Amino acid sequence: MAAPMELSCWGGDWGLPSLHPESLTVMAYAKFSGAPLTVNTINNLWRAPKGDLPVLVSQDIVISQPAKILNFLRRQKYNADYDLSAKQGADTLAYIALLEEKLLPALLHTFWIEAENYCSVTKPWFASRIAFPLSLYLPGKMSREALNRILLTKGGPPLYTLTEVEAQIYRDAKECLNLLSKRLGTSQFFFGDTPTTLDAFVFGFLAPIYKVCFPRVQLQEHLKQLPNLCRFCDDILTCYFRLTVSGHSPAGQDTADANLQKLTQLVNKESNLIEKMDDNLRKSPQHPPRKLTTLKLAAGGEESSPMSRLSP
Image 1 (cartoon, rainbow, N blue to C red):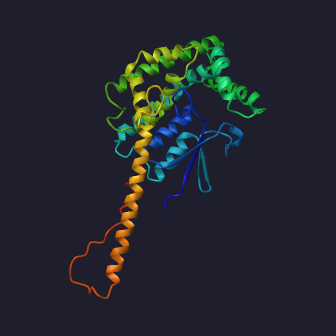
Image 2 (cartoon, helix red, strand yellow; image 1 turned 120 degrees about the horizontal axis):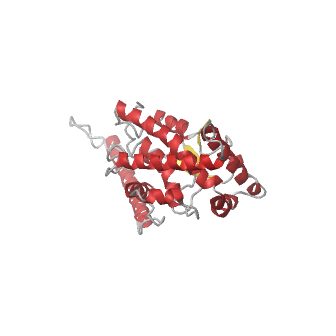
Image 3 (spheres, one colour; image 1 turned 90 degrees about the horizontal axis):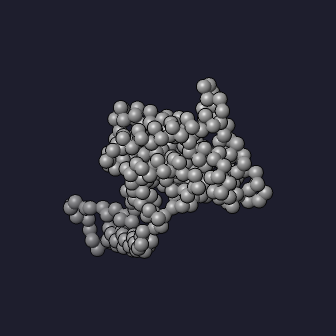
């Protein structure tokens, strides 16, 4: 039996299961690959096992950072990239590098550096979910870390002022969104009809930009001019997180799930009863064995294990 896996991540709002891009990436990949994660919302970084989010815990194994978590899931045979070719695998790495280089700085700036967004949305949202007195400190710490990360990657020559850096990172981000839109085209996902690692990363980066209601929406306005990327986010929320465009579960879904659970329990009971009857008949002296092919009934209530897939 596989060891239980628990994912600790930031919570969600605005119709998203999490507002944190890296948490969203891991959550989406788990949905795509069928990994049975138990999601635990942590609103305090210092309570996280490694002081960072997301964090995956499985028995005595503690893993942080999305790339490492996804590699661990692949080693557990939960591989969303099983059917990709070598070229598609290389394209995946290239596009993820593009996201981190071109889109991530603008995403960080939108959330943590843009003064109006930070003061009216980001800081109040995170502060309201962090216990006092850490709520007075952690949002500012996260903002400073975001600024340092932007300046570390974008603050060198010929960009010397923050204004020049801001203009460049938004140009890069819009160019990245255009490239993603062109690559996706009319397909449901980036490599056809099945979501992969690349889809998880793109969703994790795009969904917060698309859904969160900011007063300054420069990047969001550009994203909404690319309808295939918006449809991409909406489809994943609807199909894999059972959320509609408005962020609510589809009507009747909870009832359907409850009925399915009851039906499964009933099947389990009936299957167990049949097994007991079969055992009694086999042990009964009134029925000597016959030279006939006997079908051994399998427990109908047990699900077959997922197909073991090897990491590429």
